[in-house]
Amino acid sequence: MKTFLGYLLSPCVPFVVIASLSAASAAEYYRWIDQNGVRHFTDNLHNIPEKQRNTATRIQAKTSPRSPEPKTAAVLEKASVPIEKYGQVVIIAATLNGKTPAKFVVDTGASHTMISNAMAKELNINISQNQRTIPFQTANGVIQAPLTSIESITVGGMEIKNLTAAIHDAIPDPNVSGLLGLNFLTHFKMDIDPQKAVLHLEKK
Image (cartoon, rainbow, N blue to C red; front, top):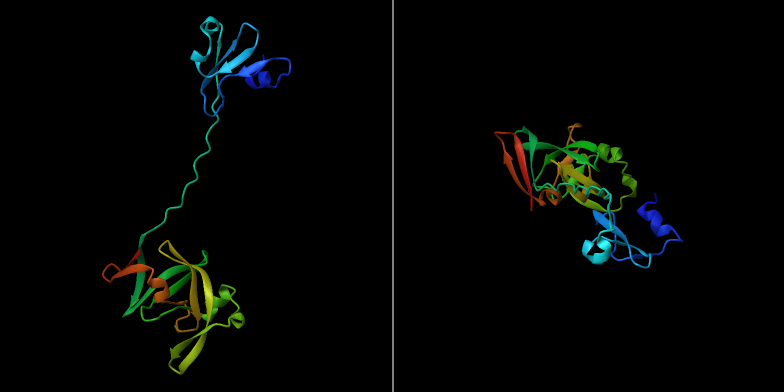
């Protein structure tokens, strides 16, 4: 027995398609032959003349399974991040470029985010190629710290991309990779809960 597709492709069988048929859009259709021997297909029984309705063959179409809709990644608007607090110093965990873990001091007094030379090396940043600098006050006076662009910094699941950062060993602790300055923090409303040791961030 020929399938529906076989009838359509057969050169020896005349046919007229009354309705546009699609396995994905029609659940069933009817096949009928008129007085001239022409085979017809339709998805509406009322399209068949009354004289031929009794001879029409009902065919159940197999519907094509729909591909699942792609899931859209959830965009976080708020996050509560655990902190380490040492006196007035607040340290949080972050991820650089989607894969490199780091700890940063939260510094609302710094205009720019800063990473250590060790972190710059871990991120394969060539300091000698960085021509842009920013003046930075140290105990020994003002220095010119080179600037670089970080692909992304993620804190608590919330990501800021293409962030400018200075490169300098501002923090003596080798376990701390730098500090988060205002060019990162101003993207958020920020609140520190010292009792629960949590930093609350909300995107502006």
